[in-house]
Image (tube, rainbow, N blue to C red; front, top):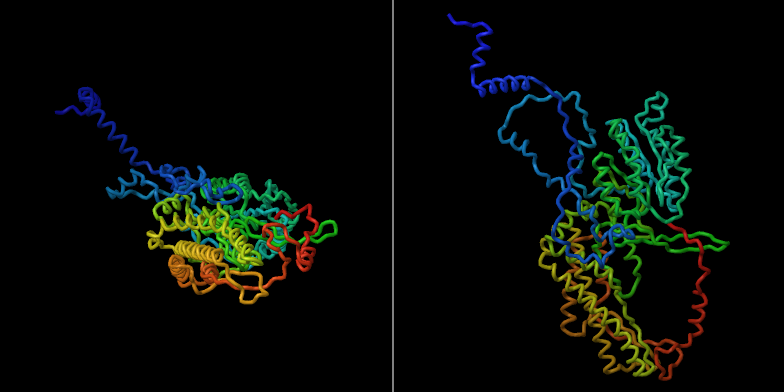
Length: 628
């Protein structure tokens, strides 16, 4: 009979090999661990993405950054900083090897208990992957406030919300701040907050901050009383420094009240009210990363950017010492893209300002991208002053690229047409394109020759600059058909067409001047004493000019045909309005006789010109020019 007593088992275990004992112990431990249930919380996706920085690209960007306006320096957007190069690409993240192994083996596991897991907000769950097209036209401050009311209501339906208003303290924003203050009570009524306040159930709290050269917390703590909010907005003191450090303000505000998001588990949204792009763009990437990681969207009630230019001009009138002054003051309202895409080329004759002062239909790049990447909106409440505007529905297809800059740079290196357009735009900003004179005095043949010779000097510089631009653009023509985005196609074709047209005019002008110097023309009317070069449909300057003219017409016509209702079409039409050929017209002007004197010597003014000079005398210069 077998001995089955406990002592017998112990004796036998002592005789068992060590590996058997170890195996038995591990089996018991594994069975115990398998019986344990646990609660797993999904990691914050934004946190993971923000903490992993891609390796910097070794290949250098092809543009010479020394000839371009720098991003964050005097508020231009043309070079990369170290922080910009580290921007994330969520699609590049490597898959977790453990997760990959689980998918390969198709393991079936028991679903963990998630009742205690903190649920992300609806806004975080529906975070958009695409960031282009985050601009809306609201038809003024009232429309912007109505749109923001909808955004706040959506947030309140999800969680209690903290709305932080950041007001640009510039003097030019006084009217807009007052309009918003008047609208606040209506907004709270629409949100049902006035009735909720009586029941002491306040899901919405609001804070007011102003910024300029410094950031000021008008409300030290978030408030719920509408009257306190209106009073706080009206107590904002104007900042006369002329500085708008908006990204610094966003960073300070987000840091100060981040606990509302992380500890109190509330939604937090920031609303910027401004009319410029900000003077501290170097903080853009840092600001985006922080707010995106915490899920704190940024909205902006601002102005449209000026198309392809850094500055717009605002006509301002003010009084000083009993004098009334009116002046066009530059404001930093553009451009709408990270790099300049529009060539800085003048038009020969006619009004230049209306083509420099065009609406881009989108907000300034940095603020719009901040809104887009954090899940907010840029609300255009005012357009560029005295500027041509365009249908937002048409311009939606021409949205700038708001993706991380490293991705934009990667595509630029992959397409020579894009790279060539940006390089040509940078080059045109460095060199000032001269506009030659079109009128020549001709008392005698010698005077005419001297005047023509002087007029040809800037043409030599102009032709050299145009050849440079054309050489840059020609390097990208092979990749032109690979451009898929309407914005890039329109920009490239317009640039090539304008450079070709200007070169055709310059060469034709030079040939006409050379012919006039060689064989001065005789006046048909002996009373005339001047010659004027006027545009002509007939090109009589040689085969080279004719070929350039034909090529220019091809590109400009394509812009007009393929991109109607856009700034590119408007500029192409203006370029085509002026014929590319030249012809001489004679006319008379009453001027003092030069009697063979050097035309470069000072001349006496006519009585009429002297009168005009007196009328146009400069008024007393103001001492305190407003800073917008």
